[in-house]
Length: 205
Image (cartoon, rainbow, N blue to C red; front, side, top):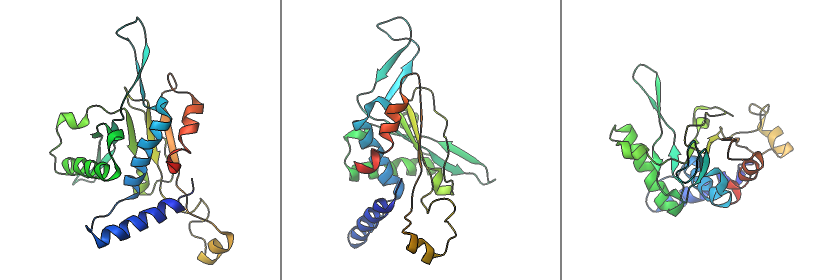
């Protein structure tokens, strides 16, 4: 998806923050918040498959009234190995952008300081993972049990094949940076069309 507007809005926001609080927002902050808003437009992805429903025999679908956004946080150990922990921003759909960023940063702080409690990991309905921060252009993340979807964000850059192109050629062709967003979803409860509607929704919310 085109990333020009994402870049511009982040730059404007960070320029303003530099004159006030000195804080910064990342692309993941913006994308995470947009994903939550998009789930309000396409709520089917914010569902879970259950093997046994209380009021019926057999499997069913739980339609969650709020979004529990899981954040995939990578921890690199001293030996170079990695551990992935996924805390949850509870009722993320009730938060404005500032509150969302504060909640996001608080969870990341807890993870990196080893102060996260079991409750910090409970309640996730949809997960956001951003391997793009490590340079991955596109990935297909694994869906976790009890969740309807996991959204993967790739690296932001020029389209494949143009990464090392001369800037003059890029300007002449009018190329803009793009970001690849993937949706791994539970096909038992979510249709391909619903995921297809969701993916182009988040940049426009």
